[in-house]
Each structure stands twice: as C-alpha cells, then as structure tokens.
Length: 251
Image (tube, rainbow, N blue to C red; front, side):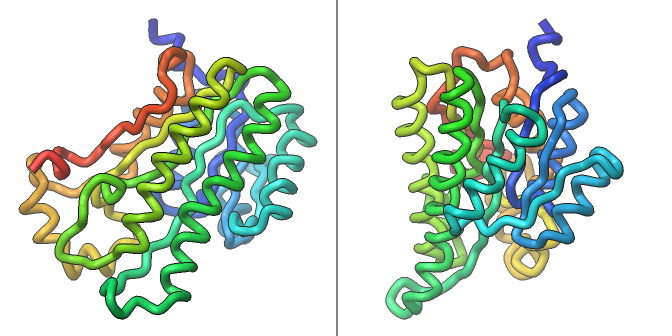
C-alpha cells in the first residue's frame, strides 16, 4: 500500500516555492521521490530553493503568475528539460487586508490577480501539457477563507479569491476527469510562515483560541495532504477541497 504514495520518477512544479509553504511542499514532493521545479516571483529565491532540493541541478524559475506569457514559458521550460510535467502545486498567493467599504480598487485587483487569475493561468498551462500526455495531478492551494469569513481581520478580496480557487479546481476537475487529469485543492488554516509572522503577532492569540487543537499550523502540517493528492493513493479523488485547519472552521 505505501508504494502508492511514492512519487519516484515523477516531475513536479510548485509555484510560490521560494520560501514558506511553497518551499515546504516542494520539499515533501522531493522526499517522496519527485523531481521538483521551483517557481517564484523572486527568481533568486526560486533558484536558491531549487538548489536546496537538487543541488546545482535544480531548476528555479522567476515567474509572475499573473502573466500568461511567463506562465506558459514556465511550463514549456519544465517540459523542455524533463520531457513532461506530472504534478503541479499552484501555491503562489498574496494577502492584503481592508474594510469592504473603503478598499481601494487596486488592492482588490492585486489579490484577485495573483490568487485567482494566477491559479487559473497556471491550471490552464499545466492542464494543456498534462492533457497532451494523458495524465497528471494538479493541487491548488486555497484557504479556509473560501468557506468562512475570517475574524478579526477584514479581507473581502482574499476571501473571494480563495472561494474562486475552489471553483476553478472543481470546474477543471469536471472538464478533465475523463482525460486523465485530476485537480484538487487544499485549504489550510492559519499557518505560521515568515510572510504571515506580522499577522500572527497581531492576531495569533485570537486564532489559537478559535482553533480546537489549540495551535496554528506549521507548513509541515500540509505536506502529507499534498503528497497524497499528488500520488496514486488518491487516484479516485478529483474536485476535492481538503481542509487542513486544526478544526478552525467547525466552530
């Protein structure tokens, strides 16, 4: 049974993997046996992350996921180097808070562009390559914010973007199921990373008090779910949103 979780011989991509959750998920795929290409808006961070995974042979790519030309080039570079792409984890995302009645349009647009448009463009490019090969697994990183309204922070843009990610996931899964490509997503709860550290300092006590297990997530808490969804162990799973929040969304 455990051999069904192996990713030996697979080629994977993780976006937003220069640090934080993305790098942790890339590490998990690598430990499961996959060759992992790393993409990040910060090209130096992508290269550094890739070299940590594979030494000097790692492939790190600087990519703006809101730019279809760059996204298509990212997939082409991976297929050109490794011959295929078997697994894609679309993790790149940002968060910017604001009250709904006063949120500037550019703050709304910036979050929707990266979190929703970026995931769609990546799914589209990855999906084309996988459909041509007749198989593949895509895992999008959504959030519990797709299902709840967070407190105490106001973030209508982030919540809407992550709800959209869940529907992009389900829609692509429905379209591609008969052609060998599975599409799922994970929805993490509040997770401690360098990017979230200021918010954790500000609101972490409230979040912990509202989490049944009594703590916030570490990026490693997400690793097993992604390996499962990338592997043959989940061959009959598609269109699913796997919540990983320590019970936060059940209260």
